[in-house]
Length: 369
Ligand SMILES: C=C(O[C@@H]1C=C(C(=O)O)C=C[C@H]1O)C(=O)O
View 1 (cartoon, rainbow, N blue to C red):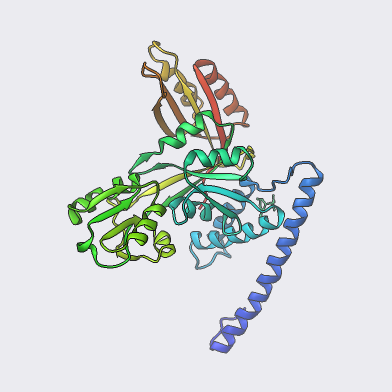
View 2 (view 1 turned 135 degrees about the vertical axis):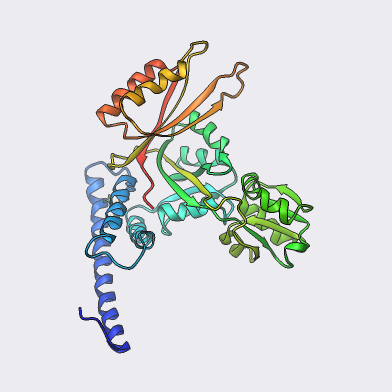
C-alpha cells in the first residue's frame, strides 16, 4: 500500500483495511465455533472450552510478531490487549464463562478479570475470598480470580489459607500495576476528615497519608470498591483510596492521583478452576508443603532437589499453620516448569518423599501481558 498523502486517500485506505480486518475476525470466530464442535466430538470439551495455555501461546506470538517485519507502531501491551478481546469474544461463542472475583464492582480484582479474560465474560462480584473458592467448587462460577500478593503490602493470607485445602487448581496468574487515588464527592484534600480503604491500600499509601492527611481518620473496609461506595454515600469530608474505575462507577472526583508510596506497585492475582492447563512452553508450578518437625535442615532438604535440577524458584512464602501450638509452617513455592515435564515430575516426587505435607497447587502459563 502506498503512503497516502491526502486525508481522503488515507481514509479510503483505512476503510479498505477495516473491511479486511472485519472479514478476518468473522472468519476467526467461525473457526472458533468449529473448534468447540471438535472438542465436544473428541470428548475434550465437557462444556468448558477455555484453554489458558493456548491463549498464552497466541498472545506470546502476537508480541513476538510486533517486533518482526510486520510489527507496527503499537506497544506490545496495546496489540496484545486487542488480540485479548478478539479471543474473548471468540471464546464467548464457544462457551460463555462466569468469573467470580473479589467485589464489589470497581476493585482491582475486577480489573484483573478484565485483563486476563477480556470483556466477554460474566464477572460475578463476591464479598470475600472464601466465597470465590466455594462458588467455583460448586460450579456456580467457572473460574475465580483472587489477589495473592502485592509488591508492597505482602501476601494475602486468606488466599494462601484457601489454597491449602481447596480441590481447585491454579490455572493462571495475572499481574497488575496498581495505582491508588484519593477520591471524593466534593471538596479538596485539605477538607477530608475520614478516609476509607482496604488494609493493603492503607499500607501502600501510609507515607502519603502521614504527610498530607495526618489527622484524618482511617477506616479499614473489606475492599477498595466498598471504600468508594461509602465515600459516595456519605459525601462531605469523606474520601476513599481506590482505583479510577471505582471512582468512575461511584461518580467520585480525583483529589490526588497516584498516591502510592512506591512507584512500582504491582499486585499478583491467581486464576483458580477445576481444570489443569496443558504445557504452554513458559509455565510456573506452585506447590505447598510442610517440613518434618525437629529435623535439622528439613527445609533445606525440601529445596535441595529443586536447586539440583536447576529449576528457577520464583517465589517462597511461609505461613504458620493455623491452630498449631508449635511453629509449623506451610511453605508456598513457585518455580519455572510444568508438572507434566518428566524432569519436573521427578523433582516433585523426591520433594513429596521429604515433606510431611505436600500438595501441587497447579501448573499454569506465566502471565504474558
Ligand atoms: C479457539 C479455541 O478455544 C478458546 C479460544 C481461543 C482463541 O480464540 O484463540 C483460544 C483458546 C481457547 O480459550 C482453541 O482452543 O483453540
